[in-house]
Amino acid sequence: MGEGESRPLVAGRLRDGQWHGVDTVAAVLLALAFGASETRSGGWGAGAMAVAVWLPVAVRRRRPVRVLYTVLAGAVLALAFTGWEESWVPVGAALYTVAAREPRRRSATALGCSLGAVAAAMALVPRPVPASGVAWGVVFASLMMTLPWLVGTALREQRSYAELAARQAVTDERLRIARELHDVVAHHLTVITVRAEVACAVAPTDPQEAGRTLALVGTAGRTALTEMRRMLGVLRSPGDGAELGAAPGLADLPALVDGAGPRVELSVDPRPPLPPGVELAVYRIVQEALTNVVRHAGSADCRVNLTRTGPEAVEIEVVNDAPSRPPARLPARRPGGGHGIVGMRERAAMCGGTLSAGPLATGGFRVHARLPCGSETAR
Image (cartoon, rainbow, N blue to C red; front, side):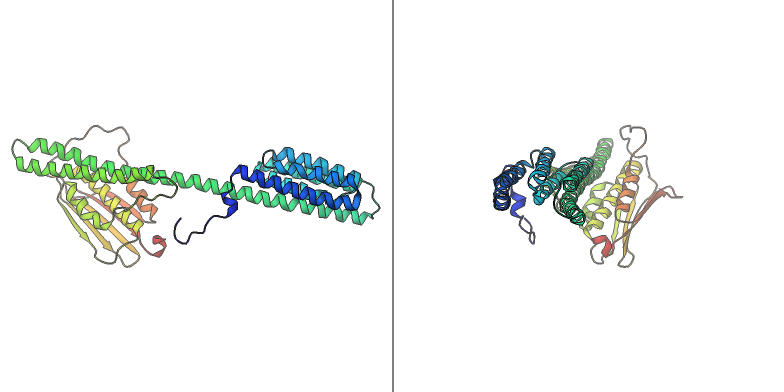
């Protein structure tokens, strides 16, 4: 439990079996209390009827609808034969359970049947009270049954929204982890594939360059394994709300550009750090842009510029020159191409920013993104 987090209530820690025990004790106590009261005012028959109406409430969680109609039938009989006007109280308790646990249409039907039955019983049973008293009794009984039903309905809706939000959170987390895995695997495997083929090509004529290239392959492989272990650890960790740990940010950009392969000139505005979510977006956009450079421009020089445009935004620019030689051949790709630029646009859009990408007249390629980094982004 985190700091400042309140301990759960006792009710939240009870299991179903314990709740059934609580219901049983409560139903027995209420049956005895109402039975004793009715015995004093109406005799043993009235007391026995009150006990019979309350006892089924003990199993209201197991069979909500059956308990409701059983209690409703008993309440109508008690009202008809003994004049017990408080018979709507156990009906209200059963209606609360039906509303909290059953679908909306079924609970609405149960409410309508209960209101109709109690109103008909109170109106049709002959009693020495004026019509206005009967009408007021019907209204009061209807109100006392409708209020528990409304509370139960609100509880069911709240639970439904909470479950929906939890499922959406799980889906969002899976998408986030999938996006992170895609970025890590796509970048590092591209670097490993291209650099390995370059090393094979230059090994006969330049063993030292082949050695340096293979060193890049090893660095990229170790980095990929580290990041994948971090993300897979999240999937193995118990509980909800697990984070991806220390996500990469601006401090990791030098290592990223050193391991990319092509000659990369990095320029980062030294002003105060960005919010963590924006730093991760900046890192992933630069990573994907460098992946495209390695994939499509091979040995081309590249420039990465990060500029703060005031306190509200940061601009990212990744520009590569035209390649001096054709890039190493990669395995054939499926129809439809890759999703690198689409992924970068999604990253920018998640932060409320924009991204543009396209070829230059000189033969190179430029990726430009602008991400807001004000207080509204940091939240």
